[in-house]
Length: 361
Image (cartoon, rainbow, N blue to C red):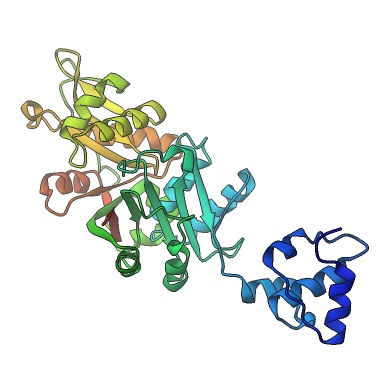
């Protein structure tokens, strides 16, 4: 049956002897209808725990908790519902899981420490997608945790995060900074945190976290931009040939890897742009794999026309009809975009937008 005779193990336990049993030997023991009691005795012999406490309890007591991927549509849908109860702190992970349930075009996977009462969730790409150690646009993780001590234990594992790569961690929880700084000291990587203002549209907040609208005096007619010259500017969407233009003006872009990321976003998610007199994009907005509106831009010579306000309004209006949660971030120094968000009745979320750029030493 196996290298270690299971009856010998059982008698050894009852007689008080303790033969040496390796993890490999234990793995070779296959419980069946006829030997299940003896198999449990062998397991407790290996763990050094009393047989009466139960196999599952013994494993939890002796074996370090490892994160594991959720399998199947039902589990991911259940995760989405659970994360919704923890908004807005779970927003970055919630938005990502929402779009995983809409087809998962970036082929992401969700890891949890336990199920269904999880403490920590990590969203990450599949290993086969992360072939370039320097590509932090692809090597991006979204994290939400109810227990920071548990989170730090989970993130130590190289099976959860590959700390040998250039990578990004994104979260709506600023408290994760302590966890990541602690890991930087033990895992030997350099980390730079970016903290920005986080916005959600009023329509999204009404559906997901209506309590955030308490005390807000929003007029029914507010949030609409001024009309633009429709003869000069035509609404359209981006195609992959426009990625270089977006990349040129994106604050986090300007390189080959960022352009490939932009191309992927254009190919997989709804975009919106305005075409100028030459019928090329003069103002645009995109969406990334987390469902966040990103990479908005306008050509310098057209920045006095209020085009970006119209672009974001039209893009958001379309995405709202699709039932998508709509949110974005703005740098604290970007006063122009803050004014745009205020005009459109986008609401500031207290927890903020957080990203940690990690580079191994």
